[in-house]
Image (cartoon, rainbow, N blue to C red):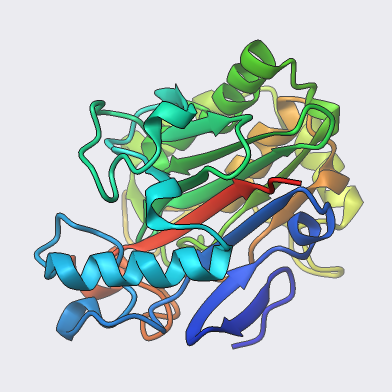
Length: 296
């Protein structure tokens, strides 16, 4: 599998993906897991990070231990989302260490996490939805979000920028952001009601779309430019580009295009390498995105 915007890493027996731009800032440790390098079996093989899909708890905990070792922390330093396709965001403090991983979370309906505490690894989970990473290079703060079609149409990326601004004084022009592996437009068929919701949300974004086209940050040179919503192969169906939608949202929130990294890796196209809900018809584990401020 060729990758243009991310790097594959193999360390301590774990295979994972990283963004060079986030690695290069020197402030964070981060990764996006693949299916490789864990101990889970069957449909969960092998790096499943979900406790709620039927996998053995001891397998999931061992998988977390391995990810923590790669990140340079412990499972007790991790804090996990409790996702339900909202735009609710939790400000994470040292009192939250371990929640959702080695001890119960005392919160629900949280799809975004932000913190300015070093040494806390934020964790969120995916199997086609979009991971969003945020690093405030000025105020040393980070954010991690889960954004499926519901979160995207409610502009989770903009909600994260707003929350980080309110909590940490984050200025969007000082943010690094990344859009992680998820389902691509070719694989993501939606019905008319979802398509209409995106057309309404993106109304007035023609200037930003043209800026994206001119920048060359997303569309290949010489390619036919696509829209976020394209006509589908069947009557009344549409193909939805969550990568482009999130890119537009992040740019509209004030993040320069030059500071946004965009995946080119589709979960649905790579079911042996990444978990995909659509490709597996729901018989799968969960991938994990992790982001942690370094202690130095």
